[in-house]
Figure 1 (tube, rainbow, N blue to C red):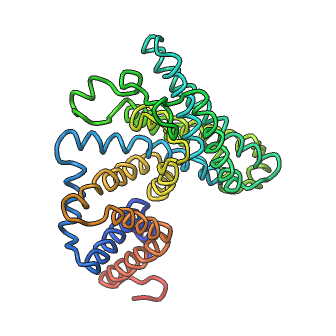
Figure 2: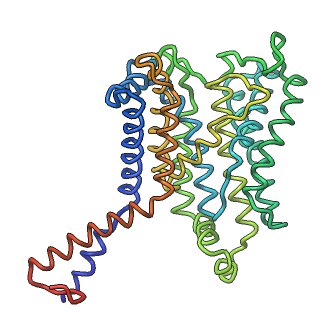
Figure 3: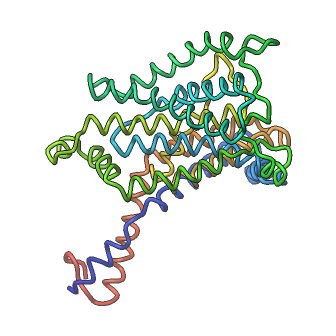
Length: 373
């Protein structure tokens, strides 16, 4: 047997991109079957979703605006996952980041805009970093599972802000939300607004792209990234190699919290412009699906966030055009998540197919491997 033959077989292993695309296609097909069952045309439904996401510059701008916080939370979840942690606290981290940024909008309206933008971004990241760091500290110091602490801190953030919002950033006309941040004090910019008129697009998408690049560099090109991945792979081996496991756990959750806090800034001071006192942002949980579909890879998360933003931005057209409940789009998203969670099945399926093709080629060449002629 030639030395190149094992290499040929190795080259035909299923990659993460193929597995993710398979999950997406399977989820869409399952959604189409559901639409057929309830008596709707799936082709028309998918066309309506694309129409709602891309019909005109305004809707394209809306789709991009929806993608920005999803990217940040996806990066947050994916970054923590590299260290073997599951950051399910994105919603709470978004809330505290958005609250601090909204306070600057309420009290610092006379600050020069460049300094103001820096302050809301930096303070939002700091607030999210502290909130995420609490989970990291509890994990490192007391071995409290991060899922438990993150869930509890989500609710803590919600009910603490329930009291702080009317005390510090009240809306005089309604008690159930904060004041509305004026457009001139948000991340929205005239340049993007002119190109995507009447949309909520803002600087957040630019920050998100920068974050994707920075996180990619940290994970692939720095000692910190290597240590985090070593801790995630096997913390006992990492500790034996001299890596400070507890410190890296805290650092990973601090950085993850900062990313989610920045998601809160882009959402509450760019997209929504107000904080409802008794509601957690769905993006904090949707970001988990984004990271899962993107395989916790920053580049994969970028495209995954765009895909989910298309579904979220376009689902309104389902009801308006075809009378289909917009929850169907949420069902498709959930189905894709289920298929992504079972990605090992797709990986095994593709690997078997590739292996069968390889053995067939070997047989055609008259070579043998493992007793197969």
